[in-house]
Picture 1 (cartoon, rainbow, N blue to C red):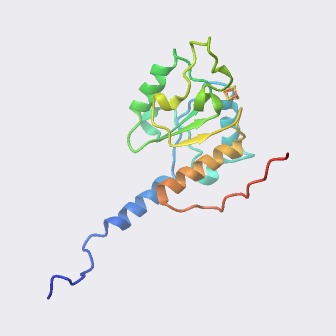
Picture 2 (tube, rainbow, N blue to C red):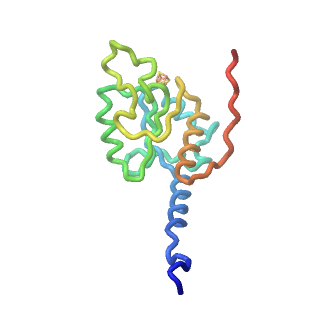
Length: 169
Ligand code: SF4
C-alpha cells in the first residue's frame, strides 16, 4: 500500500469535539450573580415570559463551582472587582463570560472623568465572550447572547438572525 492511501481514522476526535460542543451549548449553567439594574432584565429572561430554559440555560447556580457562564449584569465597581475575578477563577473550565449592558462593557453612564469608583469594562478583569449593548438590554438581547455563545461552541446557529431594522433619519 502506498504512502498516499487514506485510511479512515480509528478515533474520530473531530466527532467527539462536535458532540462535546453540542452538549455544552445546550446545557450552559449561569452563575447567580447580579450587580445592578441590568440584573433585573437577566432575572426577567429566566422567568416564565422569556423562559431562558428553552435554550438549556435556565439552571442558575448558586455556586461558581457548578456554573460555566458568568453574566456580568451591571456596574462593576473597583470595590467589587476582586470578587468578580475570584468568582471567575472558581468556575471550572471551560467557562464563558457575557458582559450584559453598557456598564459591564464600558462603564456606561458612570464612565466619567471624575468617577474613580467604576471599572470601565469588565473585559479588563476577565475574558469576555459576548457583549450585550443597551442600558439596560432587553431579555431578548440576553437570549441572543446565549445563541451567539451556542454558535461559538458548535459553529452553527440554531435560528436565523433577525433582520436589522434601519435607523430612522
Ligand atoms: S447599563 Fe444601564 S441599566 Fe445596566 S446597570 Fe448600567 S445603568 Fe443600570
